[in-house]
Length: 420
Image (tube, rainbow, N blue to C red; front, side):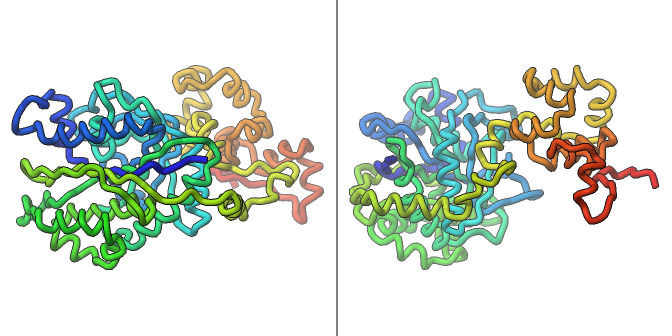
């Protein structure tokens, strides 16, 4: 089973990434940042950590207000740095543990957290600033990551209590994963700071120290603090420390703090802290019961003949072809799909198998491969094929044979220029 070895709290200011990339370790003004993270580096190496579960918030880089989620879990196998305005930071990609992420996602949904999931999104300094300092050297983190993006910038946002409860479920999710993995839960952000408005530059080190004391010894008290109070005490942007309660909730009540530093050089009180988890290992029965709970809703669906649930695993493995067909909603893309298909498929680096499935309009083959029906519906509309024709192909029937199984023989599609 996977085991949570401990929790790490780390600020994620872009200051940290700048210091790393500019080799400021020997500069007295910057040295305390490196000293704090050096302790984290040593601990991660000594504890032989396999996976870092990274809790962070994006800074309106890859998650914009056209779709802003409270909890978005990364389920990809790789994450690259994002362009935040001046070009992407030249830092190695982080390898994702997609299987663990899927398991955690399924568990959190089973525990009634309405999760969203992402892949193929570059990630900004919210994750990569601390990650690049936790990793030793410049070659990147050699283990794997599971990122959780928490939407804390567009109100309303999750409460401190909700974050803490998610952490409690996260603990059960990790422990019920059957592979032997050593996991550290990393909460990023904070401490006190405000970067907008006339209150810009606000800090409160006394509150930061109180927060850290409560986080270690009485996290329940922090769940009773309202967002307005977090903003009053630590700055509006400093209220992002509610994310640290996810990390603390994922640890047992019994922790041992082995490291803590804070340093306020400019805008943000930069912190690193490590808690080792001293909790007991759950029983085999408890783990089995929780795994059954995770799988309860879909148990038995695998026995439905001719049914292919679109899981997170299918979404990842068939992402390329689904993304290619999804782009048929773009007029220029669908025009080339009709007039220049071979070159278009090559430009999007479709595999030979994927190209053949599309060329042959192999509808059932595409389903078996992992395409979701609702991109096939778009492909059919572009090709002038009706939905019932696709349905018939799925069943290995002619259109006439299929229509005889319907109450009314009709044809239709999602095409927007239907000729009446």
